[in-house]
Image (cartoon, rainbow, N blue to C red; front, top):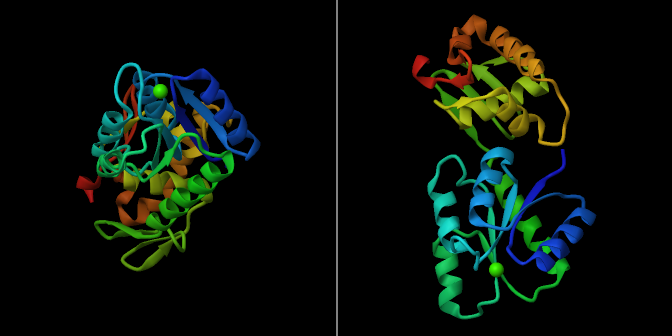
Length: 229
Ligand code: CA
């Protein structure tokens, strides 16, 4: 699956230059010219990394970074701040605001691509962990799922759905949101496909009784509810 980079930059020339270089490096590029556009792109497409310009017309990139890092839903997305500012104070403010890295304009595309790789790798290391809900355990390194130590066999899509749910409990996701977040924004899959995989996931969890954690929310989508565990 192609990794998504969101470029938040109000200067069209810079945005296009970045989009060109990122596209050529194999990334899917999303772009936003304002903080408002950036927020909706993050919510709809859930990028793998955000390149955040400091000076935006409606909100400062620093403030937007703070907001994204405060929200449990988005705080794991790495953010690289782009700025013309060179003072040490600004660098510190950017990192304290939650930015994962910082790059000063003008920068070479090569340098930027190298920085992106570093934050993505760090993110991958962060995901290398075990998450537990009741007796249900999922390990991201081995891709193993077990209940009371006995392994549950899941297909790759069911695994990804469960992984996503366990990391995003107690929130309702529409089928479209699940498609974007689990299958990827550029993949064309019918919404009914989500139902098929949810059914398979529930079936795999039935013996443990944990199928009831995967709840259908009528007219809205699905929710994973650890409280039922
Ligand atoms: Ca700007």
